[in-house]
Image (cartoon, rainbow, N blue to C red):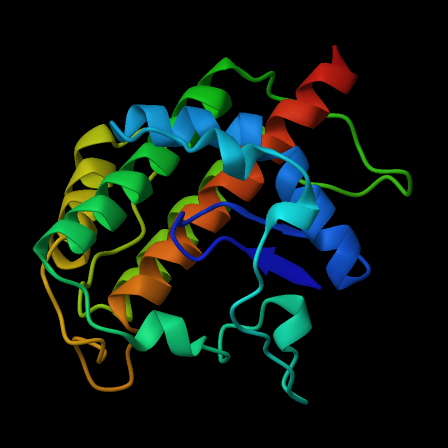
Length: 209
């Protein structure tokens, strides 16, 4: 089960039940606060409290795997219009999530602690995965780039700049291209994916050290 904060793209956690997922979401508030700070936004202290303080506004249930974060399941709230201020805010949070990922990855050891069964990617594999996913997600916004190499700073910046330009543009809630994603959904998925792997790297780096 995934729990995602409607107004804070990237603040999303999962666990075995709705209650546990909300508890995990609350527990990660201090880590997400850094993302909000980088975006120049005040993170409401009330939202950093207990899970009981959250208000569930929408639940997704379907045979297609909504509880597992399936990319085919788009919340109704993500298909609503975004004015100039809301769009700029989403874009700023997505950029902040990418920045957090970059800094965490650059400071991490090349080899990360493996999972209990010996699984899990090492740092460079995770970086490649995140950049590849960003390039794939970008197509849902009409942005087409080859996957940039991890060390190609200019190519990574160009991809992200084009994604940000779409996210920051006001919209009526419909996908910017046929078969694409609403910008709210794209911002949420991109920020969540970057942060999920950033926090994974942090946790596995500490254990590895």
